[in-house]
Amino acid sequence: MSAQTDLSTLLQHLRKLRHEATDQREPKAMTRLEKEVVQLYDQLVGAYLKATETERAVIWVNLELRDRLLTMLVRYLENVSQQALKANEKDNKALVRDLLRRAVVADLLIDSRLQTEALKLAQRHYLNLAYDYRFDTDALSESLHVSAATFVQLAWQYQREQYRVYAVRALGRALQQNRDLEDDPEVIALAMELTDEAEERDALRTLADSYVREEFIRVLMSKAVSGKPEAVSLRRTFMSADHRRFFMTSLVAFAIIGLGIFIFLALIVMAQGK
Figure 1 (spheres, rainbow, N blue to C red):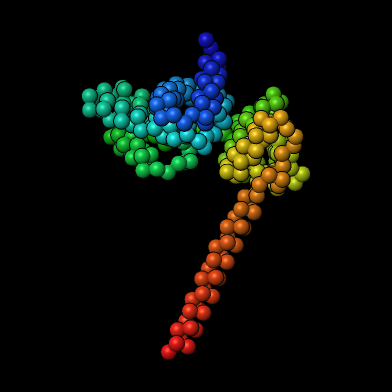
Figure 2: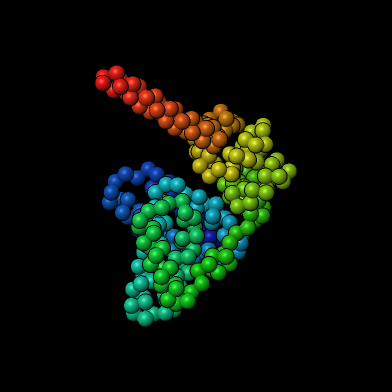
């Protein structure tokens, strides 16, 4: 089995498990599923370490997670950090270094999308161990970096193959990394085509904001499942990032003004009472 075929098989398995995790509610089944997912992550992390830059980009696109599988990726990092500590106690330096490499990749793929105490503890464990071993985690992370240009190329490839969701994720990732791409005519054209937005600004914002992007994908996939794959515009489905920020800012402002009026009236009543 070639490396490319092997990676394709792993990602297909990931999609299957993600579907199961979405539907599963039974505790015992979830425990079994989590164990299987964590084992799969170990294989994917190993593949990431050996992959080409384009293959790493493919893994990134498939790991754009905001569900149970992201929590399980954190659990994998916890497991690897604990294994590294135990290997260090046994003075197994080669195993420690291998586990440190895997911890770096897992942390890289989590990409600060979660901030939990368990994650912070796992990070502290492996980073302290890396310091003791003079293991340069930053250099490894840099060597495994995927450029924005690679994500753009992958987005075009997915679009040609009519994998719209993956094209959206790939181009969104590129825009997150390099906002200068918002001035690239070809990127703008692709963004407008993928989002069905008539305005450049709306198309780019749909993709560049990770939350809005995933909401757009959710709506897109629900349309496909319902048998209505017609154009899905961000403006016709939910508020854009700017609208959400404006709404929240206005809400806070009104709350502050309301509180101020309440305090002012209370002071007047108190003064009259005297």
